[in-house]
Length: 245
Image (cartoon, rainbow, N blue to C red; front, side, top):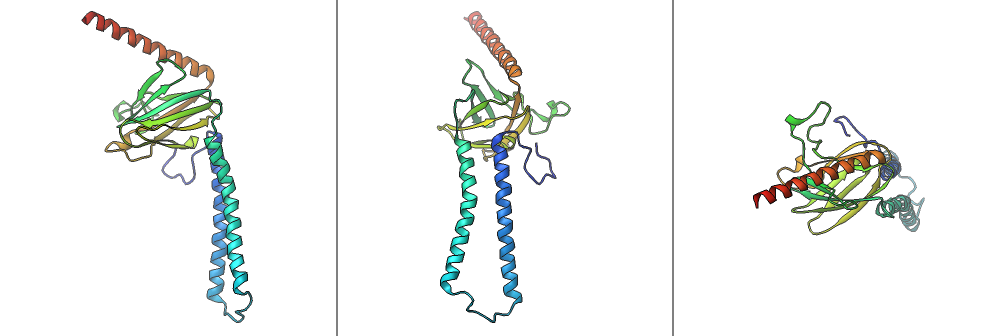
């Protein structure tokens, strides 16, 4: 997770964010070189007397400042297009999760399982356990297996939201009446924090996202326990309804 004095990105936890970090460094070096060249030219113009104004004619100057920027744009654009393709590439995901934004919480539906769904609310400050983070912890975490392609279907029930987990390189808008999708692969186990990144109302800052990546064995155990709890709750509700009738 991020900390107050942090200058760079969070540690990468998926191949996509690793590619984004490489592209960031690549683009930053290009911008630095361009800025250095422009600063040198400005300094030279300010400190040098123009004694020979016919060194380059107008046509040569036009060619230089047309070709060089075009080459720079190509050098930046090609890696960017590659990353866009990798982000949009979704082949045979092992698990599909639907995340729905509400004012102000998230609900998750594991479409590969029957009745595996739950709401995820922020944990109030007074209920936090030692080591948990204020305004970032939730009562029910979204759990996924590591080293497996995960597809996220993202939508909203009321207003615009945005499902964002920086360590995974994910930020996708949640739009009412529309399904957006993205994919990621968690390369290591851990707990990764995110927040809604679209201003969605008075409690916008109280709608966190917690993604827990675990080995497949632990994920299967977690999903089984959630399903059992859902079945018990379903049977209890039916019993109470029968007694009431």
